[in-house]
Length: 508
Ligand SMILES: NC(=O)C1=CN([C@@H]2O[C@H](COP(=O)(O)OP(=O)(O)OC[C@H]3O[C@@H](n4cnc5c(N)ncnc54)[C@H](O)[C@@H]3O)[C@@H](O)[C@H]2O)[C@H](O)CC1
Ligand SMILES: [K+]
Image (cartoon, rainbow, N blue to C red; front, side):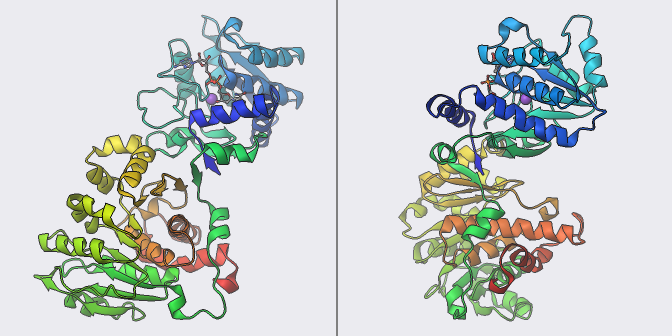
């Protein structure tokens, strides 16, 4: 499923209506699809109020109202702007609604309309769509406020009114919807920390746009279960342990041994063939029995912190560095060495990202893929921007950084954004608040390490790693865990369930 900006949606709409020839049909399709979803949610006894505004979102609203009216629902329209404000296309659909006997609630001074909003069982928000510019203007802002304060249940058409479709905007007043029926494709603001909540539960309805137009216009998509099932490589019968990658994990310190151990185990559980763990002697002594399937190698350390020395990089298919590594100055030299000497995909996580801040210039020299797995705080530091600025424009900043330094980025968050050096982006929507705990990131790094060693592109590997990681947490919650008790180690043990659930069991 593609993710679009407002402009991309307009371009697709325009091409569909003008070039392909859909014309007014598109709005009829939109309204009928939204009405179908509403009729599945509404009881026949419900009072429905469709609030329509000046633009095509309002036009959708008139089609919704007419469709529900013709299905014998108790529906009325609250037109929040005078007729002269309606475009020709919207007027056309208003006329049809009227001709079918549609009724209205007057938008007049005495405030009866506010009572209508309060008394409706469902308010259908078709006030404003993706054409919003800036904060909702006076007059309509009172409607938004009244809906938020008095409506029992709000179903938004395409986008909650007043909410920007794109990233980067914070000055808005918007309807807080219980559910949003999104038309054709989710907008960027569906996946931003400060706007996602306004959509409530959401689902997308297709209204007839040619699929090829999305592929041409949009550069972002949701890496969902279909994508996972389509791209995750199957295991063949004559595979041997070398077939699934020989990975190296460099990390840990005498002061933080645990996180490192989880990365190893996650990599093996996710399907890596061979994993070598390089850390201090004390770390290895402490964890070797936890994952006997891994191989262990002591590397140079000083006072419990890793320092630069020989690294077992030869013959490795991918390397992950940084987990639990600490921020000691000597460890920075180890990071530099791994960046310069690893002749395979390199995943930099945790404290590796801390040391990378002063070594970004090294990235451009690399001839092999580099993957960064920052959370928002680590990404903000790498970008040297405030985290609040990053949080309102994560797609933009991740794309700029990935293209500038020729790296892949897994920007972790409620909606993890995967970005390729060429600017392609994907969003992972699996996972839940049970992952907001120590170790979750270390587990993801292990899954990423395993995935990048399988026969798939790096971008596919990153999307599939995030999918498996989040879906494991989701399945664990569904089978008895709670958001409170879920541990990172449960996510490791849940990986099998994801493979069994989504891939053919005999191949996983
Ligand atoms: N293009 C199509 O045929 C289809 C579009 N779909 C629906 O249309 C909307 C987008 O329509 P558009 O007319 O561009 O924008 P809006 O409906 O959001 O309304 C714009 C309208 O609102 C006024 N306005 C702009 N900013 C403000 C503001 N800050 N305060 C108050 N009023 C504002 C502006 O003057 C315009 O009159 C899309 O979301 C879909 O719902 C169909 O789904 C498919 C066909
Ligand atoms: K709306």
